[in-house]
Amino acid sequence: MLKDKKIPELLVPANNLNILKYAVNYGADAVYVGGKEFNLRSIRGNFSIEELEEGIHYAHKYGVKLYFTLNSIVYDHELARFRKYLNKLKTINLDGIIVSDFGALELVKEILPDRRVHISTQTNINNHLGVNFFKKLGASRVNLAREINFSDLKNIRDRTNIEIEIFIHGALCISYSGRCMLSKYMTGRDANRGECAHSCRWKYYLMEEERANLFFPVEQDKRGTYIYNSRDLCLLTELKLLVEIGVDAFKIEGRIKTENYVSLTTWVYRRALDYIAQNKFTDQKISYLTRELDKCSHRNFTSGFMFLKDRNELEDNDNVGYIKKYRFIGVYHDFSNKYNGPIINVKNQFKVGEVIDILQPYKNPKKFMVRKMISVSDSTETECANPNDLVIICDLGRLNPFSIFRVKN
Image 1 (tube, helix red, strand yellow):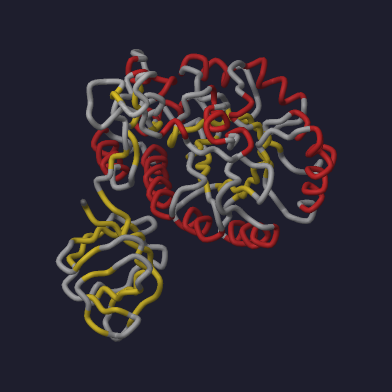
Image 2 (image 1 turned 180 degrees about the vertical axis):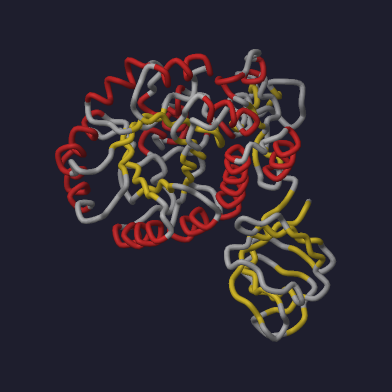
């Protein structure tokens, strides 16, 4: 029974201020973000100090926590710069700082002694002794290695009294908890420094040494094979079990993903946790929420190391490509009283006659056939909306300003 168990914190990624607002409005309890330095998603987006201050203000206004990632490896010659960066954070009311490097932990405790410290999954903690060791060092929370199984997770929870966080959704890595050298070897971009080129997601062929331009698929498939590619983690079906053993925080991966991904995964897991709290998390509800997850691009789902009895699923990654049942066509921009419909900032092409699927915070998805569409640029009727256009969907009525629009492929 759940009566003695609290519902875990739902922790959601955001790569910029705009996406942070979507995370907050779709039901995140906390959002984790990175700055311009020293985090593992440093190649795209992220927050300036000024944006971080604005993000803190916005999150706290709605009772949402904000955690800051400083989880990259820090080399000795960078310690002075790291120290200087920490000093810039002194006046910012962060709810926690995520680290993996021992030296970084030492400096955070020295310069920001009143901040909670969370230990990143990059630290690869697999047992209760490791968890308790970091508690002694001043950590408030530990994100465990993704490679642990459920039995070990339960034992760790029973033998520790520090907050335990786990990943429940998102990309996995072929290397141990993300400690990967493949990208650095192939492109010079170090994944452990936030510059991953995602080389494991590329297609690979076998080339015969003496025939430089003669390629063979590694498996007998003309499309090649994703020999390094992992599936995407999805623990939705096991969520109630994880709540029952007392996990403190559920984390969604995806700090370089779009508004569509962040909104949808937050919406799904927020609703799942609400169902669990109400004792309504039935097989029917799980099936419904799983279908909703399919509306965002993803690789084949897996329950990962935690629940799989047969590891063949993790090894058999041939043709584990992206599943794209829906395409993300736009976000809400404004409302047109004249045409009684939302103005959409278009992300991908769609046309009159298509049925759009609309996601809104805390509401069931809504479907609407587009019968008339107006181009904002010249106020004329148009049959086709293209990326970066602003168009009005006539007669749709008012929607939440954080609405997400999709179309089935």
